[in-house]
Length: 312
Image 1 (spheres, helix red, strand yellow):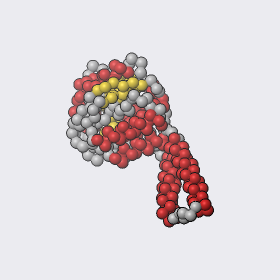
Image 2: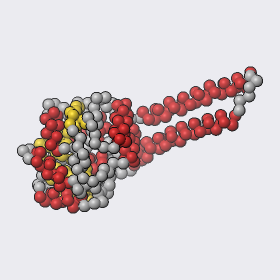
Image 3: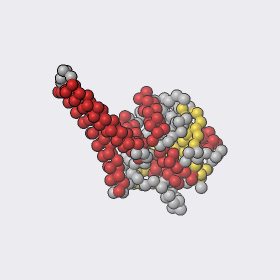
Image 4: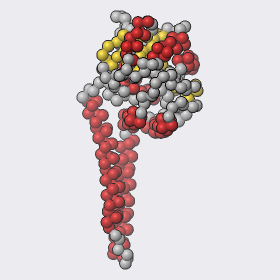
């Protein structure tokens, strides 16, 4: 059993990995740790560098996925190989400093199940900050997130909670949602968010939307209820307008012009219908893929394990 496992999903980060491993080893040299690097279908030389690091340091473990499966899926793959009493999840760009792991570890050992890193200032694009803020507000409602907690990608988790999270076998894991479904005993500490060490970020608008849909459709039926409420609201407005137009037609000299009204009503109702059908289709598509046992990830090879180590 290790003191700490560090799970890091890796995607096109060949320029960061050697320095990342060096900093982890420097920060945790006095502890029994393991560094699990999950290569999520990188198109650069990330896997070759991971193999090199595994050969140089017996604390480093490499997991190579057959295809790009997404950040949360790669994290689930790494968690399934972790043996630590506590497991850290962090990014591969060294914006999350390995030297802050001990701070998270010390706080979590006080009795918490999860300790998040909170950043007063994030060194990233404005739209990413806005997306994080928006997803946080949605999470307050959909997964009952404590309002004072920032769902940081840099966090430490107690082993018992990791074991519960790994019971989820669906193809669309959302690790933050799974954590909050498992425990409410969470806290956070404020640490510094650093500049990216090398390269450019891989998180774009479409990946951000993917996170939103995982959050919205995997842990709550609120979106379906909102669609139903909007349907009732539009129907009620239509009923009131119908009464108003009937009144205008029979009891007033003013004759209602119908073309513009019909166009506007059709646009509004048609848009709501299409949005509701798309939302229902998103739920049904995820159910279909889950029933057909779409895998979270597929592993091509691993490096750094001994024969006696078991895969959770």
